[in-house]
Length: 160
Ligand SMILES: [Zn+2]
Image (cartoon, rainbow, N blue to C red):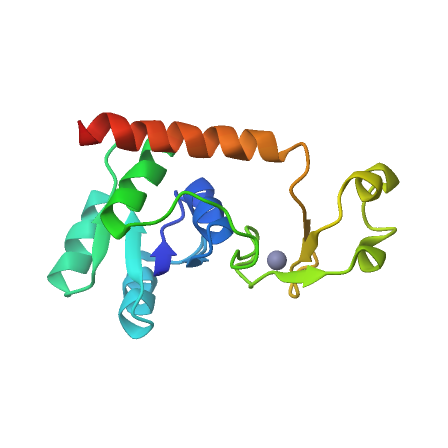
């Protein structure tokens, strides 16, 4: 899926990118620019701004509006609406910071860029070709799994 998110949806943007979706995001884009990008690049506009939602709808742009939800609920809402799978597969992930597609990289190539200790414990690394951010499923991944579980719980609760 291709999205463009308004400036209030930074956390959601990072999640969608890691889940493999193309999300354009900027805190400086004006409403008219967001609508123009959505239309030109056939992206779904994600917004928390009711006025923007109304304007985009009037212009025939596909738009999804979030009402005062928590971060996990927002992710659950968007996954329900667009059938987004809550499993991370780094082979399809995009960089959470800049939206470029990650590339798997050899262990030797990340040596010196991350802690030696991490190199001892993990074998698979991905790198963003654009900003250089390195990704691996390390101990910090537990927090990521917990969030995904919490999102799945929101989905289950609302499907009853
Ligand atoms: Zn990047």
